[in-house]
Length: 216
Image (cartoon, rainbow, N blue to C red):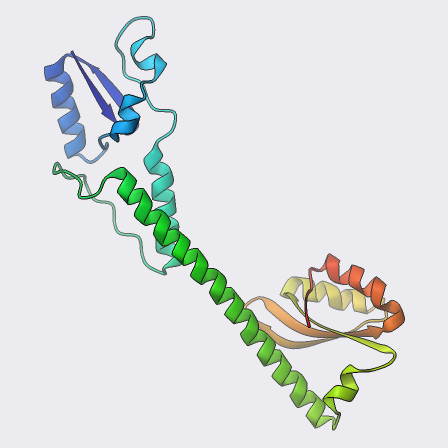
């Protein structure tokens, strides 16, 4: 008798038959050897179930999570995931633990760079919007400091999605708000919104409903 542990399946039966079947399955690339730590974690139903030896499947394949993470890493990197290949009979160059470590390490680095890219993109949009605002003031012969330090007027500079900007424009038709788009790019709009200082508290409630991200 022999027991062969694979990812997704356990084979139990006569040694000659089991080893031959396992080799055939591996050569076709349909299964992979299970990591030792999982092989040592015997499933109760695998060996102690009534009726003796039988084939059973693992409840969860640890390689599935690893492959999902690897696919996300490739997508984040902007690369095309390699075509599926058949398994080799040779010993893997990396253990499951080492593969996991490398994939998780790459995923963490990509996440850090993704967040940095988002911050830089936001700063770029703010600078573009500020430049457009200054150009508008210059063409109207208005001073920046005097414009921003108005006594009765509240000015909000913020970013929201194109769909929410459309909703904000609809709300502005029935509320004392003046809404001006400054920069529209990649599904977002940077806008300048004017209202009276007395209406500021109510305006902020509206901003929250359309998810305006305010900039100082």
